[in-house]
Length: 232
Image (cartoon, one colour):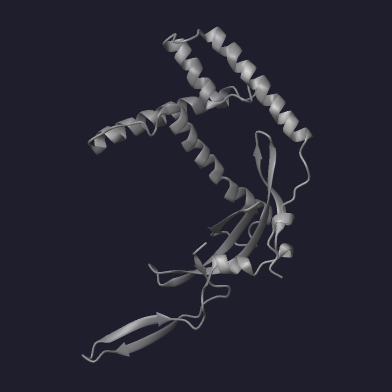
């Protein structure tokens, strides 16, 4: 939320300065003042947000409040102001923001909400890699060994993803853990055989499906606006 933005397009001015030693310095300036995203957010009210379904989870659609605004961000590398779309998401007491190079004319607020929500899949992939495949379980002294470990984890995750895609119609709740345990049962015969593992998997899926249906049935109307700090 410390990102500085401009709410109107910048007019860059060139300022020439001469030091006491006669050296000329060229400095780019502008007459506008930037604001932090955090400070900009504090000026918003309920009416500036829209309630959007942004992600379909295992227990139904997740909803949040979204606000989009055209802004400009100064790029020190190119010494130019870049036009961006600011996306602010408020989910209960959590606030997240993103910058997109798509304009508000190119995409709708629902599409911006969807694109911002795709970060979920990246985070979930890391969770599966760490929790199921030991991505963080390594002790190495050289980068080459680290590369080997990460390559093996990526190959294993690719195998799991392929299996989940192949079986998504027949087994929609198939998880990375399910594939890992079945692979162990087939290759190593550790713990239980494959038939017993499939029975346990189906039992877990029945419990998950009951939990999903219970969540949908008991889903109460959203109280997102009740937690909104109205600054008006």
